[in-house]
Image 1 (tube, helix red, strand yellow):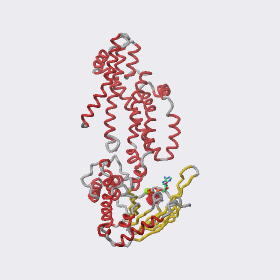
Image 2 (cartoon, protein in one colour):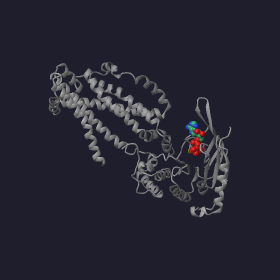
Image 3 (tube, rainbow over the protein chains, first blue to last red):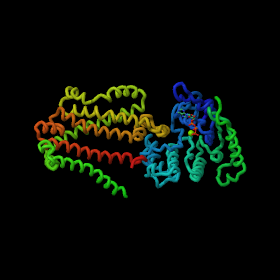
Image 4 (cartoon, chains in turn yellow, purple):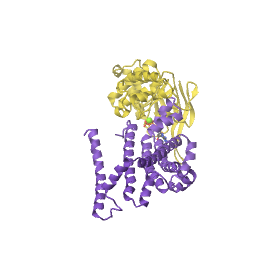
Length: 257
Length: 257
Ligand SMILES: Nc1ncnc2c1ncn2[C@@H]1O[C@H](COP(=O)(O)OP(=O)(O)OP(=O)(O)O)[C@@H](O)[C@H]1O
Ligand SMILES: [Mg+2]
């Protein structure tokens, strides 16, 4: 379980200049819940995810994960970055195996686990490719496999499909949902796309910008397992999308803080 | 054009300027502008070179120079890379090393050579010390700059997988900074070639630099040119070997061919 308690983040941008990126964020995510974060560009979605990941320190407040306050990164929380962040000097297999290797998993075990994950993300046969030889969608799948390899209980995904074309995007959404429905990890998922958020999530968190605040949290009552084609025709799904899109439009672009 | 063909093509192009240089040398020698006793024609010098390159006595000198070059350069790489990386990882190391580097880097190291010979003797140690002193700083600075510029998300990905900060430094930051590290090493290698020769010219009883000075003192101009040719051919070979190593190490990096 993730409990974000009154977290604020202030960046010191330059001498005597400060920027309040996040203000007083409180949010609880239950074990096995899929929560999306929607909000205008620059409202602090990535920053919030980095704080939960332990990569960036909050200015005030606390993040508690399974009763332990977050003080740094840990293998219980697996990030997937929008920029993939693959190791360019390692092959696809090397990337997925890296964490397992470093933590002392026996070689053959690490190899078996990595191959299993590459099969899961439909990349078997690409083990010896370098990231530069892959398409954007394939790179993102490697990044997802690399993170899943060390079995984090929580996935922190920052617009993982943002850089992809619409077709690849829906394919990966389906794949992610398939993987998630199997072992129900807790997912915190940042996105710009309303449809994506509604399709994937149990709850959608809407943020406002300058400073980033939680504006609203919408519970998505749609049956699972979800199937894209059926959902697109589902009236409730359509209503959610329209409602959330309207709320996004109403958002004041900037606010005096 | 296939890569292989274009490689031989590039090499052929590379040979042309050198051939022109030798032709110019031949031209000047034939024109009589410089007496043959001062500027022997290239044919004579290369003939002597071929003679010497199979003479054990000459090879012994070449070996001594190479030994000093490699030991000095090797230690410079180890020290420069290690300190450069550790400076990125630890503020404490950085705050100690940075001022030292700032003071020592601009000092003309050749000025330290008398002190090295007094403390380390006239043998290998003083020459190796000079090579280290001269080659280490460009390697250290290139490593430090390169490591600072590494995308933080690469390190985050490792830390999230449960890899310790120190291990992350050497398994992620260092390989990610490799393009910059190798640029520093190339500069260090060139400097090493120059400096080992210089040191041998100043005080030595063996090595290629010593042979050159000895020949010059005795007005044996042909023998004076032979060590020069040897060191330039060595430089070419080292450069080719370095490029092959670089291509291998950077095979995954997008900007490298
Ligand atoms: N390292 C930093 N130093 C200073 N300011 C920062 C830093 N990182 C982020 N910010 C600021 O914090 C705010 C939130 O940034 P963040 O990247 O979290 O936004 P975001 O919601 O993820 O945006 P996007 O949707 O475009 O990815 C922005 O105004 C940004 O300028
Ligand atoms: Mg972002």
